[in-house]
Amino acid sequence: MNRFYFYTVLTAAALLFVPNLPGQTQKSTGKPAVKSTGMKIKYNPPANTANLNISRAKYDFIERVIKVHMDAGEDIMNKAVANAILGDVATEIPFKPTAPLDKRSNKELLELARKKISKQFPKTLQQYKDELTRQAEKRFILYKLRDNIKIHYYRGSKVYVVSGIFYSLSPDRRTVKIGSKIVPYIDIVPEDKIRIDKLVCEEKRAEYVGVRYEDYRQRRSEALMRELEKLKTAQDAANEKAGYINFLDTWYTAAQLTQQKINVERQKLTSISGAKTSSESGELLVFDTPNESALRTKMAAKKKEVQNLNGIDADQGYSPVFWDFTRGEARLALQFENYSPMATKQYDYFVTSNRQIRNIQFDYKNNKLARVITFYTRVSLQDYEKLKAQYVSLYGPDDLQKAKPRDPALKDRLRPLTWTGKYTTARLSINLVEDNDVFYGVSFIKEKTGAYNKADTLIRDAESLRKKQEESRKARTRPGKLSPT
Image 1 (cartoon, rainbow, N blue to C red):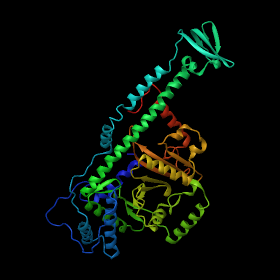
Image 2: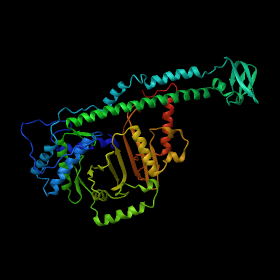
Image 3: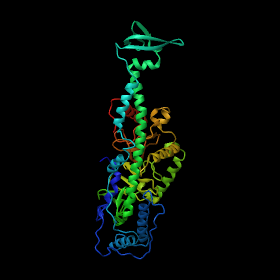
Image 4: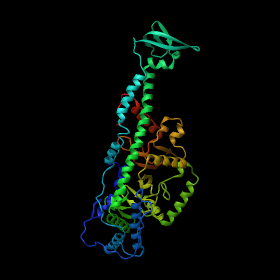
């Protein structure tokens, strides 16, 4: 599996310590499995229950219960304390879901969404393109050699007509021979050039097909995304109503999530001299152990340094962590800001208070921070455009806007944005599903400029992206070529 997309299953690893898998319900024994301590910690349901707010409120409540017990000096490594935490959660949040988990995948929901819009858009993209191709061939007729034709050409301000057998268009496109008359190609009226010049005719046909095809594709895509969003929202609401909690795109029962959070706190306490258990494999990881005072001084100096920079270069790493911080420094700096980094062998990841963001991933090269990936939660096309506007306001025009402000690729609403600076290179992009109709995620990648070679970087240069987009656009709109259905 590509490590870039591995984040969707990262948290499942912590369930190695949990009795049941996500989505399973615990069997009732007729007796309470855990007892409350009577601390009277209350769960406050959110006023707005949309957008997984119930899951977030329950997650926050579980964290708050654990914090109260730990602040009271209780040893979370003790089984009785863990049971007391489970009991306090159970008094406020039901542990047993009232219905099975809706496990339908994005692919299944996408197929259902396609069926729902089939009346509005009965033709597949390929069917519609084939229809446009036939229309274009009828609209833009191409004469064959030896056809008896009539064309118009200019002489000064007057237009003349010549009729006869079409013998030739010179290879250099300087003259046309019709009957016994030779006419300068440049003098022929534009409408007739389409009829005698194969290149001009194909260009006009492609333009006719492309404009209409892209309009249909975009309208169909937006309708499909709206319908898919409705289905996903209904699925989320049903799962939350049944009592499940969504965390990092994975569904848990309250018991499973509470146990996982207890295990996370236990892992933190088992850290000795910078050692930490990987949530991915259970392997013991060893990090460098920075001096706290020296690190705070280093952080202050770096913050002052970037204040004098502009655009993307003013955004290095993920404040309070900057490029080239060691892994130990990065993890400690995050803890200064109350983040709780989780460790895998290759990278760290953590959750922020920004509910629009699923999680942040730190990648290291030679034990130095070299890449930061921000994974956003489910994003609509409108949300993506807002994100693009926000980043442009922060960093200014991206590479393509600067280099080629009139490039047609700029009109592509789904295009990624790339910024290349002296210290930081970044890319905001969407991850499209197989038919390019909808996308399932948005990511913002920042890398230390020059840290990765072409094989390892996750950011391609803007010109390469532009060329690939242009080739893709031409392939989609060129008559006779296959396109997504």
